[in-house]
Image (cartoon, rainbow, N blue to C red; front, side, top):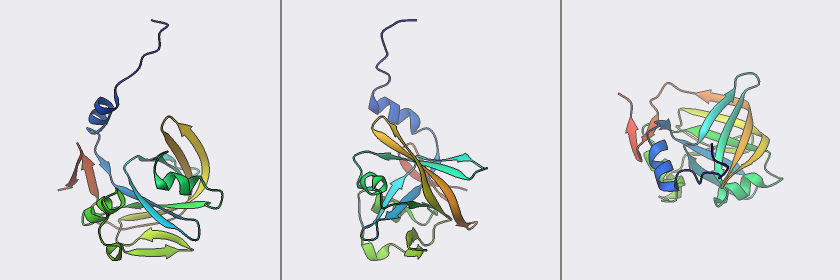
Length: 162
């Protein structure tokens, strides 16, 4: 074993490799009472059943990072998109379409996305710096879901089940 630390994979190869992991598509939502924001994220994971914890990874350069890092933001939403909501994934991934096509609704003041197959309301529990991203762990206080089909992301493209 060498004492010289490895530089690891370059970003392009790492992204291509991880693109082989099929994932659902989520939109993270939050507000500071003045600004309502959403961000497409596939880096979402369940952490614990008891207590109910999830984790989202947000690039430090993202506008959502600034919002979630703020002291006034205590909660955030996770919206799992349905197969019919590809346009919303694009909208919140920096290719905005008409804002009026976003089916916003609120749960106790937190903006969520209507028509999603699942919504989670999370209390910001822990913030962990991790390279060029920050991991926001959330304690799930509320959820709702449907049995509709999810939007799936694999090898840089959207897919549907079935």
